[in-house]
Image 1 (tube, rainbow, N blue to C red):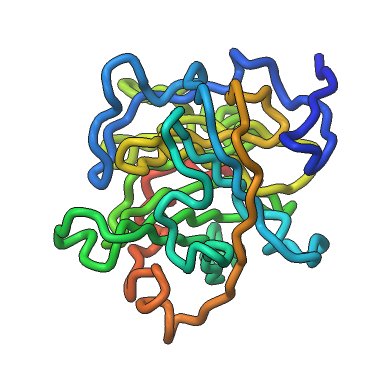
Image 2: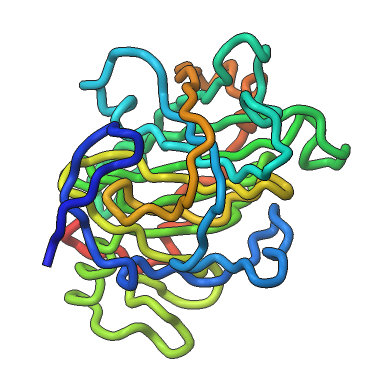
Length: 275
């Protein structure tokens, strides 16, 4: 049964998509991110005691790119300073999230993709973080325009985690049956890509909440905007600017020159014909 749930900070008012126990996520250790500290795993129980929330600025609230842009939830501490946490851009300006578009073919049909990326300041220098710590969210939309496959990618373009919508898992279960041996979800084909969790389907096609940890700025969870809040206290509500980019200038703006093709991920999933 659905119950009313007020979206964070009055952005939208939506009916709840599922009880808290239904938003399941599984512990996963992506190549770009260190293992979660003791006591904090990637699960539906993850909560931030305090956080800052970043939403896209601007008034173009009817465009799919705006509506599907993520709400980025940054964990904070008592000693955290105000403003954006080392995000690319001047402290006096909004941080930037870059938007790129792509298309992928599934069962002979072309489906749109939206790719959102943002970059933090100067971390410890590694091959992967030579230009700062980059976080990338690539979403493949289904025939209804809802996000169905969520990929979190590292700054070097390496796949970190995969989430799928609950609707996709349900369709896969109807077409393919029970999960394969050793798999948790029906949508998982076999070894290789492991689905980290499910994102509930809201009544509207909207971007997810992306939870970023205080330590290491790791993406530790995704959730639907309609799901019950996982934040005890919101310190600030801030904005980021959404900036479209092209393939030509992507490498300079937080997006790797070459992202792995999505068919590597989709090929490891049992995508149903009804997509």
